[in-house]
Length: 380
Image (cartoon, rainbow, N blue to C red; front, top):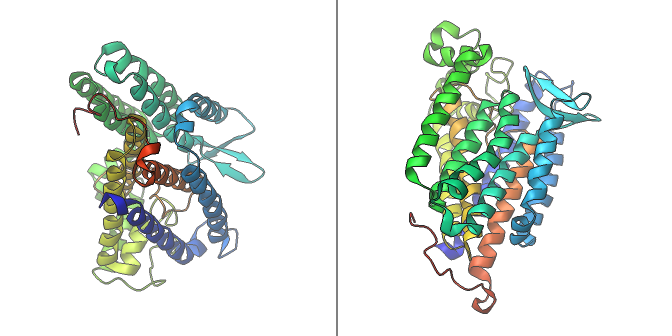
């Protein structure tokens, strides 16, 4: 299967992109900030899709070891972008959070680039210090200190969702790299405790947590989105109401074109199609990990694992939120939701996976690097 994994991966991503365009066509006209243009978001999404396609080609054609050599450039670039979110006049505030930069009407979210920068760094670090991955200093403290630089900016923006996403991805990469399990377990408990503390001490996040625990009491306030999402799921049933016939997108469900686009899939296309969307994400994860396991070197293994973790965790969190299995977090559904920065980074990540696949499977054996002298990881 591993020789066809890239082709299957490409088809799965293409299916999700096509679905995103179709559902955005159905929901975009009813978005509250559509600027009196039924195709406003569809046009902008098409532009970002074009940019993302170019980014995907860049990731697929440029040797992925280039990102290993230049990781510090993108890490620094992400830090600068995150810092600018707190400085006028470029910063742009939405729903009480300073997560965006705006320039001549174009907005971007630097934390999206911070996610891939963190993956670049961890893949570089644990491929360089492979034999020291279990040590306290180089196997735990130093890499976590670097990742914490990014997280400190992101969590100050009041973006707990991306913070959790980067933390979970870092855990997976360090686990695969062979880091000390006791230290990783301690880190996980500390991270979960810190997130819960912040969630209960920030008024807006605390209300979301209470709405998750007591949805009926907050169905008109903090729990409105998730309650309306459940109504969408119930209305759609098994077969759905038909494409374009959904009612929750008509100003009942806020942000139906972005973070809460998946309930519209359930309402209009039904449970069967919703499960098919989940199946496509499972295919992406399986194919991505297959590519990782057949990478030509340790950096490729860790880079592919980090990318798959980013996409998989983000999809899982989004689906968990819109089905009321998790508290409300502002994370879009990869490849489907409207959102330029996320779409570009997600497609660039797919390009990287294709590059790792090409070098690990398709290149002649004579061009491959010498096999590792030690086992790639004790856990795979």
